[in-house]
Amino acid sequence: MTTRMVIIGGGPAGNSCATTAARLGAEVVLIERDTIGGAAHLWDCIPSKAMIAAGNARSFVQRSMRMGLSEVATDVDLDQLRERLSTLEGRLEGQIRSLLASQQVQFAHGTGTLIDPHTVRATTADETIDFEADVIVLATGSRPRLPDWAPIDGVRVLTTRDAYPPPTLPEHLVVIGSGVTGVEFVHMFQSMGSEVTLIVSRQQVLPAKDPEVAAALEEDFLRRGVRLLKGARAVEIRREGDEVTVDCDDGRVVTGTHALLAIGSVPNSETLGLDRAGVHSEDGYVPVDVNLRSNIEHIYAAGDLSGRLPLSSVASIQGQKIAEHALGALSVSRRRVIDYDKASSAIFTEPEIADVGLAEADAFSEGRKVRVTKVPFAASAKAQINDDPRGFVKIVSDPATGVVLGGSIVGRHAAELISVIAVAVSNGLTVADIHESALVHPTLAEALREAAE
Image 1 (tube, rainbow, N blue to C red):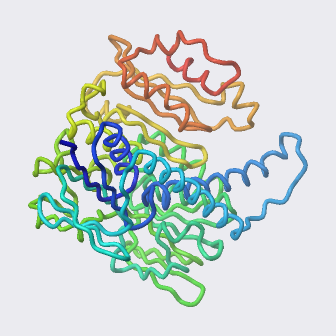
Image 2 (image 1 turned 90 degrees about the vertical axis):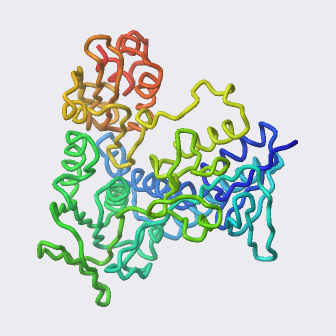
Image 3 (image 1 turned 30 degrees about the horizontal axis):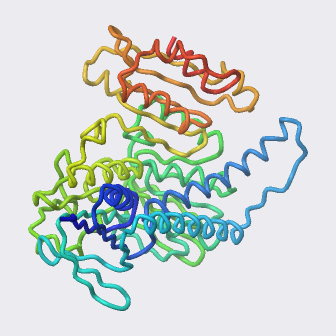
C-alpha cells in the first residue's frame, strides 16, 4: 500500500522532504499558507542576499577607481531594487512549483492543522480538506521575535522582513541585535549609504563566533564608520515624527531615522494543534530524536520548528532524512543521521565570514589539544589583484593525526571557500590532503593550501 505523507510547511525542509518522498514512491500532500519556498528561503535569505549583493556592487564600483576605472554613479534606486527582488522571488517560486508538480506532489495553498494523530486539515481560501496521513511532517518555520517595548510600524521601526527594502532608505539606521542577522543588516545598509549604529548587548559582535573572527568584522565596521554601542541592551523604542529613539538599559540613548530589530525568532507552532495530536512541545519548538521524530512515532519536525541548527541548508538535509527514514530507504543515504557539529555556515557581510566544525576558542575552552594554522589574505596574489586583502584562513586540526577538525575564513568569497574545509571535516581528511591538492593560481583558494601546510 502506498504511504501517504502530509507535510505542513513549504520551506526548504518541507520541499526537500516532499521531493525525496515522492521520488521514493510516497503519495505526498504539501500544505503552505504563504510563499512556496518558505519564509527563510524567499522572504529572508534570498531578498537579504540580493540586497547585500546590490550593496557590494555599489562598494566595488566606488573601490574600483583605485583599479583604474573612471568614477560612475552609485545611487540606490529602491524601486528598481524592489522590482528585482520581486522578480527573483517569482522566478524561484515558479521553479519550486514546477519541480513539485513534475513529481505529482499535491499542493494545498492554505493553513495546515492537526486534528488528531493521523488527520491534517488544510483550510484554503475556497474549502476545507481533511487528509488522512500515515506520516506527518511539521516544517512551519519561524518568524521574527517582537518584544512588547518595540512599536513595530513597518515604516520607521522595522523587523527584518520590513526591510526588503524599506519604504525609504534610512539616513541613520539603528540596528538592535548583533548576531548573524544583525551584522548582515549593518553591512547591507552601510554599503548602500546609510549611517548605521549597532547596539551590541555583549562585549563583541557575533557572541557565538570565534573572537578573532568577530574582531576582524568589528575592525572593518569601525573603519567604515559604523558606531558600536557595546554592553548595551535596548529596552524601549520611541518614535517622534521622522525620528526614532532607542533607550538602553545603561542609560545610553541613540536617535536615528529608523530602527531595525534583529533579536531572534519564535517558532510558528501556536496554530498547529499539537495538543490534539499528542505532540510534545517546549517553548513552541517540537523536540525530536536523531531521526527527526517527535514523541509521536509517525510525526516528524524539521527546520526551525525542530529547535536544531536554524539554517536553510540544514533544513533541506533534515527534510531528505525524514523522507528516507519514514519510507525505510536509509540505505540510499551514506549517512543515516545529521552531524550538526559539522554543518558549515556563512555570514554575508563584507568581508564575508564562514566557519565549520570545531572552533579554536571552543577547543581551548574544552582543554583540547589542537593545531591552529592561519594565513592572511594579504599574502595572496589574487587578493592583491582584487584590491581586497582583508581577512584570513584558519584551519584547526588534530596535532597527532593531521585530521581537519574545523576552520574559519574571513574575506571575499568565504562562503564559497569554506566548502573545501567542510568536505575535509565531513570526510575525515587531513591537512596533507588539502596541501597536496594542486589548486589554481592565482586564486583565493590557494590560501587554504598554505594554511594546511
